[in-house]
Each structure stands twice: as C-alpha cells, then as structure tokens.
Image (tube, rainbow, N blue to C red; front, side):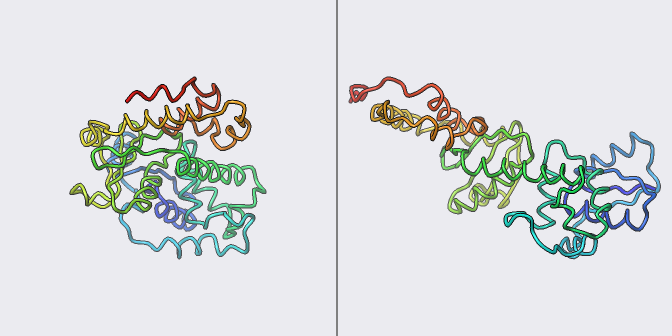
Length: 278
C-alpha cells in the first residue's frame, strides 16, 4: 500500500496521520495530480494507492496538535508555529518531503523536538527552517522592485522556493498597485485584479515581460546615481558598516542590490557636479 501526498503542509500532516495508523505503508509525494500520475505510471503501482492532501479538506491546526501535541515553550521567541515550520522546511532546496514525514512521526507527539535540535535529524530540519527564514528576510530587505508601466516588478534569485511568499509580502505593502516577482521562467502576480487576473496568480515570466516592455525611470536612476556619487566624500566612507548593511550574501537578490554591493567593494566612481549637463 502506498500513501501519496501533496507537497504542502496539509499533505505532509495527512501523510503523518495515515502513516501513524499504518506504519508499513510506503510514501510518495507530488506537487500536483499530473506529477503524481506520471510517478505512478512510471513505477507501475496504480492500485492500492491512498491519495491525501490534493483537495482542501483538513484543519491543519487540529491535525498538527493531534500528531505533535501542543508546544510547551519556545527556544527562541521568533520561532514559527508548527504549520509555518513545516511550510518553511518544505521550501528548502534540500528538503525531501518523505523524510520529513518520517521525522515528524518519530517525534511521537512531542512538538518541542522540532525546535530542540537534540537529534541530528531535528537539528538539520531546524537549520532548514532558519535558512529559509533568513533568505525570505533578505529578499524583504534588499530586493528593489522597479515601477514599469504601472506594474511594480522585481527579478529575484534564491536557492529556496520563496518567490510566492515574497510576492504576497510585496502585494501587502503596495495594495494600490499590481506587483510581480519573477524567478527564472515563473512569475507570481499580486493584486492581480488590477490586471484582470485573480488576486494572486502564477504565470509564465514571458507574460510579465510583455507587460513591462519598457522602463521609463532609467534616466531617473542614472541621475540619482550621478548625484549620489558626486556628493560622496571618500574619507568619510565607513566600509565596515557598509558591508554590514549591504552584505555580500544579498548582492544577488536584485539588480540594484548588486550595484550597491559593487559600490561597497570597489568604492564610488569619480564624479562631480559638472556631470550634470542641462
């Protein structure tokens, strides 16, 4: 018998519930039903498959309490609850959802084991959660969206699957504008009702590029850079502080962050007010 679950919080919790009732069952995961069908046809196990998590039908909070119990305390005040913990771990590039289900079942109803780090597996998944949290916070701090043709858009590059999280955050910060977050060939649209789409939608990146075919504020950015460079006093540079507020690890999250980090490492270009030719 096989338990097939969706690669999300609800699917993981439902798989844990089924596995606790039937420990001998095997596990398989998929992002959607098409992927699951392909896996099943490839493996040849079309029968005796119990599918869970692909239709919203469970209360995740109640499931988490039933499987892991209530937390007695927090190691750190900012540690997320169990549901967010699982969500963050699933977003990590190295996470195997099947191994995560086995780990949650091994906690034997003790949610504190997710955060204590007393076992090597527990410590690894806790570090996964922290890695994703830090990557998300870096995007919120250092990604610089561009306003193009009425669309607030930004290209990001992260090893973890956090583009949709950042898009929801950006949409919440700018409720009066449509926003887009582009990562490789996928784009997420927030406040999509301004574009005739759903409030939050996933599209191909080519769709966003067709909306933002020109950037009208290039000259403004260049003018600001020239002004900033002209006013910068070299002997007042605090390179140590600049490296702290614009760390190297964040240089790749957006074009502007990359340009700012270049200034930190290489200094400011020679520029005077004579550069302003009117």
